[in-house]
Amino acid sequence: MHRVDIGVVGQINDTKSIAAQKLKSTAIRNIHAGDRILLLTKRGNFIEFFGYTQVDEVYQDSNNLYDYYHSKRKLKLKGIKYFAQPVSTRDIADKLDFVKNKQKSYSYFKSEYREISKEDFTIIWKQAQLVKTFPAYLEEINMTGKEFMLSTINAVYKFVRHYEKRNQIEIREFLNILKKFLDEYDIKKSMSEIEEFYSRNAIELGFRHVPSRDPDKFVALYLSNGEKKNFAYIIFE
Image (cartoon, rainbow, N blue to C red; front, side, top):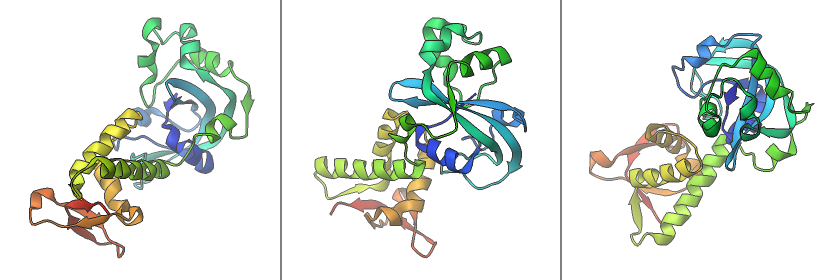
């Protein structure tokens, strides 16, 4: 089974490709063409199974997928059959053999990839009616990973500008606040990943950035010509 962030579900539906978040993931090495995968995600406070798929082929590609997957090993899917209604892990944990502690079932569904028995696999997918169309319960809250990040960054900018008495903030300080917001959404991104995303999308965000003489404060941002330039502060306007 594969746990995926809700923010990239729509993109997976469009491209029928998945991978692993860690560049050198060991779990994805054990997945091969023909393997069947149950898909699950977290909506609100619940982890839910929402679909079933099969690996069509395994290929190598160094490019990231959806600003979310970073492993070179990629999985092309034959297609996705969705659950007409999601299946909550809480409702089914008691029936699954790999969930040893039924009172703390959450911990068994935290891994990005987890191999389960054929028996457990069958128990899960038999709980739902399968449909080919993208279900409404995913459409209601789905946005791409990039859209979600940009939206969150803009929300944090407005929040900080409202409460910050200074007319500027260090970029790294701002990104630390952003990370706390992402953690609240259960989006697990490292500071280096957040800084790289911000750097690549600084032009699109449209914030005013200024440099500094202190090299310890430098954050390299991409310019419109594709080159990088060191900045240190975001100016509130």
